[in-house]
Image (cartoon, rainbow, N blue to C red; front, side, top):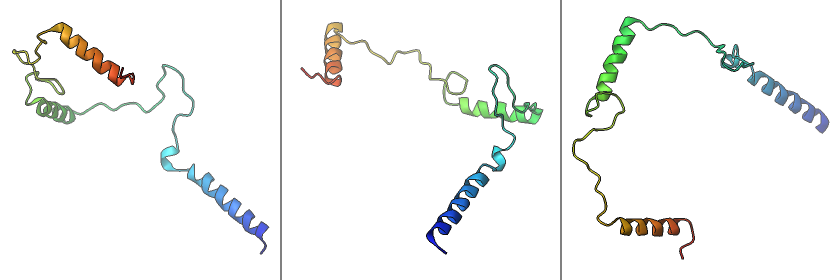
Length: 107
């Protein structure tokens, strides 16, 4: 066999591999044309009462440990943890200095 034949066989094999790669199961039946505001996917199934009960229980577990009673909330405290600076002018000057340093003009 000569080199042209090898390139030809290699080219055909490469093209066939790329063609077959597009035939994966997860690629079949997907929406190819989209209309704004129109959902063309599969319809959702309703949750069973058992699934709802399980989700409610999981959300209660996620809410434990904080005082909000919900998942992902922040702890609510009656006492303020954040203290105001004693001298507002000094705090503003320090902030200005940090901003100047971070912007790259350290002068």
